[in-house]
Image (cartoon, rainbow, N blue to C red; front, side, top):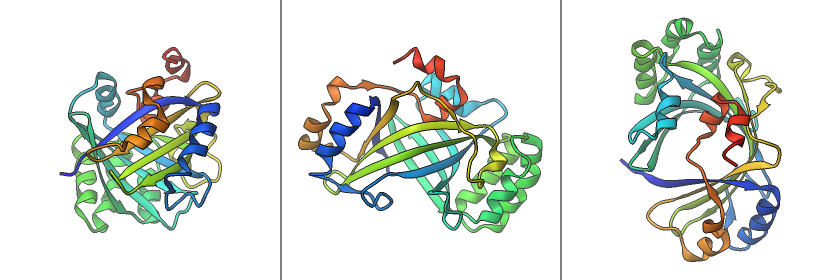
Amino acid sequence: MYYRVEDKYFIYEDQIAYLTNRLKEMMDYDEHSSGGGYLIRSVYFDDADDSALLENEAGVDEREKFRIRTYERDDAFIRLEEKSKKSGLTHKESAVIGKNTVETLLRDGCSAGRAVLNSECLLKEEGFLFKKLYAKMNTSLLHPVTIVEYERQAFVERVGNVRITFDKNIGASEYVDRFFEKDVCARPVLPSGAHILEVKYDEFLPEYIQQVLEIGSLQRTAFSKYTMARRNYEQIGELL
């Protein structure tokens, strides 16, 4: 299985402006950016014991979580993703999922019991990822628990397969059945002005990118956006 390094840092508006001006001279915008940012909206799943949340907070070495994601609220291209972590490295499996299937999965909100009944729609989709989610929903009561939404600006570099993302204005909503609505009334999960920088790469991060990022001066965080969404943002704010 193919794993990547994924490091996360708290970052602020002035730092983003400075780094964006530097990075755009040496890296390309990703395929979604077109020179600017774009909206990402995801709905995350967890089981009856909140295992994904608690394992992340405890730093469990091997863990996984499922999510469904859209870009710019485009319901013609939706992805089901399983993100796993092992020995500090990450791996992601993804598959395109139909809007009707997603609507069925989210139809009754955050009810674990109803989610089991709704999961039958996954059997109509082709691919192992759908079968795995179906099994998890029926054995561990995996169910949708929260929406996470944010604005992303992303840069990519072929050397090292590097991906640098600035994720701003991160918000959360428990109204998962409103996933396809224009406004989900997401509440902020970080104090004003605080955002997240993610640095992803394969075996090495080129030195010229390291020098621009000046990673040693940034505050690293182990918190995921999912964790932030499930916890009160004032609690996260104590870490900043």
